[in-house]
Image (cartoon, rainbow, N blue to C red; front, side, top):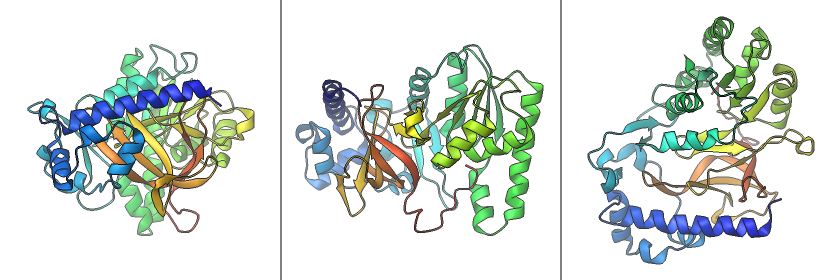
Length: 358
């Protein structure tokens, strides 16, 4: 548990950052056309009225992410970025027009910050990486290549199309899904056998499948950065003890195109392999809220729906309800703000969810 003085200092810093980002996005000189028009139509003055996180929660409803699919890009470009080429990153839907986020440097900043949390012993400087996961229109590919580069290495890639996997599974084509998974794993194993790689990114199910073919530790892997699908304590235990043989550091993360990357802290025996993630505050804030009253957070240790607020100069997104639920966890020394534990698809305990291998 973090010291209360440190927790309070982090909250003061967050409130100051919120006020700064609101001023940025609602100012005619730097702001985002969509948000400037929203404030005018709502009859509010966010720059004057929002000083804290509580003020933001009180003013904004839950964000309608169809905006990211339906609006022309010009409506979402802050004036300060006008005329500058941008990257387009997509979320992982299965059909129709995907939701998109524009980015100039956020994806690089997120992974630069994440790099500072990695152990040089297990993710050695000047070592090469292998990424086995979705690239294409997703920020993950550029982010991990940047991560490898700033740590002095290069990155090999094996691509995965999560939309295709989800479609195969949801339409009952399990044989095709297994064949596609084997195709991806074949490529990963080939690279691990042929190239000098010490750091690996992949998803939990692909890591399990790779471990059925080769021992990551025997192939020289020292650290695995993992994310993309639910990681139950049982899955984490299996990956750490059986697949990685307790010889490779395992770093679970929780992230997406709209948030960036939430880090975890090293697992301790008392955690019983239950992972807690902490948002990259103040650039993003995670709350665990009551599903039937999302303005209210649940108490520490209780389950609720995950709510995301993103606060960068490039992208302002208040109070977006993720498709996930989690347990609210206490601040810690490394991250003196609330965490989210045992993240899983929202209402997954009551209905079937298709995640695939991503």
